[in-house]
Amino acid sequence: MGGGGAGGSVKDVQSKGELDGLRQSGATLILHFWASWCEASKQMDQVFSHLSTDFPNSHFLRVEAEEQPEISEEYSVSAVPFFVFFKDGKVVDKLEGADPSSLANKVAKVTGSINPGEAAAPASLGMAAGPTVLESVQDLAKANGSSQMGNQVQTGLDEKIKKGLQQLIDSHPVMLFMKGNPEEPKCGFSRKVVDILKDEKVKFGTFDIISDNEVREGLKKFSKWPTFPQLYCKGELLGGCDIAIAMHESGELKEVFRDHGVDIIGTEQGTGGILEPTGLTANLNSRLQSLINSSPVMLFMKGKPGEPKCGFSHKVVEILKQEKVDFESFDILSDDEVRQGLKVYSNWSSYPQLYIKGELIGGSDIALEMQKSGELKRILTERGIMKEETLEDHLKSLISSSPVMLFMKGTPDNPRCGFSSKVVNALKEEGIDFGSFDILTNDEVRQGLKVFSNWPTFPQLYYKGELIGGCDIILELRNNGELKATLSE
Image (cartoon, helix red, strand yellow):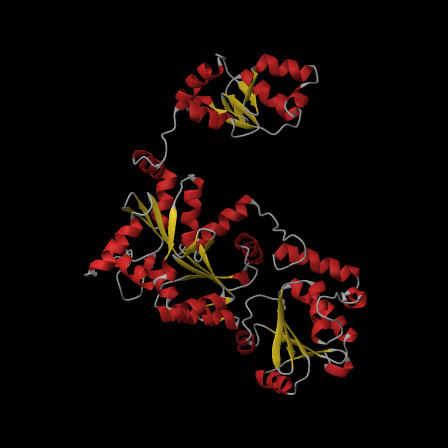
């Protein structure tokens, strides 16, 4: 595009020196970081162009983010579209995402056309771009998760695609989705993360997202992260280029790799982050014991339960919430003495660390495996933290697991008796959503439910915890036109 400023058009910035020169002039600048592959970026560029006509006395500049990594890094650009606003040589505002109204308002404010708190005039709300452009921006932004307009809508993914993406993510302990390959990166951000991983001396797998558009677009939705590269460790998204740089510079990345037994080139793999015990002062030893025993279930984590500072800590918090366990926590980022001392005390150098009745259980991977196997619930019950569930409690929980609940022989897709099949068909014909339990898979439930409900046969249909009846009653209700009404009262 042509020159900015008085001409009222958009100028492409070719170098950092060129941008620095414009900044030093003290003129009002609006800088748009974009990418040719991003549809929302392209659509916002049309809005940006129209705004340059509305505000001809300001300079509207455009930078292709991946072609100018030096400029992008200076302004911490990790996603596109991204806008930076300058006045008198200083950055006064930023905007990330496809949000035409916010862009117009910020442009109007930085140019002094409106007072703070006032809305921009209709002509500056991007209306000059036309309704088709704005509608396209909104739809695209919702699809790629970058919009701040209204509710952020995540487009659903086919289960087969989800499974394929998860398999790709899990194919290596450290997995990088990038543009190009490690020997020939196709963008500066990808090159930067490759260099970081090489510097960390970790083995890593890669996938070139340019080679497969289905993976590229699917992963944005699957991870809810709209840009590339994307770096994963043991199936957990760490982030993009900026996050990788920050973690690398702080030493956090090395700690994450070590904590999760990632293979370091030239060392043995899978050490699990175990340290050799060393002496601790009596005061610190006593303090750590006191913290560990301050709650029957104690979690040492990064951040707080309401605001975890790492994905692994978040995972354990969710596990404990799912188990409906009361627990206390300690933010190890707030106290380095505890953070370093506990590694030695527990002979376990990773975080989070979960303790039950003063005994170390482990980190996120162990907690997840124990939850899946039922071992965590067993330990919590044995140690008196969770009340042992009686058969009656279990039956009540099953009955209440869905507003309409059917206890049957087999499954809705594969009924194992004619009576169960008839009830399933009646519910489906009425368009009624229902949960089900196959009583052939659990004899304790099968026999217990007969006594609990005082109803000796199956199937049994419940609504909001109350028994409706068996096959004959359900068919009679259906034939009288009363089934749907009965199950929606």
